[in-house]
Length: 293
Image (cartoon, rainbow, N blue to C red):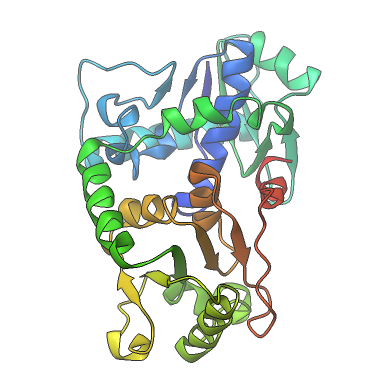
């Protein structure tokens, strides 16, 4: 069994890390447990009913709660650190811990042999990647991360309202908050800059009614978007990303949050690296290369 014990960031990073391990596990008939998914487990149909967040998906006798899941994660995390520091290696327990820029290919013969020959292999790090099988197993990955019905229902209601008076629904991710500090604010854009970008997106569809679904990690003012046909999202971590997945287009700064939405819903994505540039939507999902290779 491969046990994931690394937390590489927030929701988007956690989903892509888990998904790469899933691709490997599905292709090679491995078992997975992911105690590091404790913060998000309750949102999904598979992990919400399994204390251990396992693949193949199954229900555990006891589901626990956020507090007990956190304790279980901490136990596995510190056990992994102990194994790494002591260089303890047996066929029963072994650990791999990566630095941030270090990468392990999950489809490599070396990793496959290690996983197959170890009863419990602990994995901590960000760049565990299976580029060979991620696309191959994409539909199975999407099915595994299906949200609970209550969240799906809320998303469907929002999208139904959003599409009442539009031909093109564009998801706009205004990433403020943490992005003011991330990379020294490189991808932090002011509201008026987003508004100008939205105008350019409208101009790309001259004969269609464009509507914007705006989601942000900081409360936004409706007055700033009064000149647009728009609707705010539900202001919910899971509902917002899965609402984006039901749009026709998505725009936002580079983030695995919107990348996941684009992957899950097969939605063209424009990642804003230059706020003044003309929008160019990635319709081939080439952006996934950063998360699977």
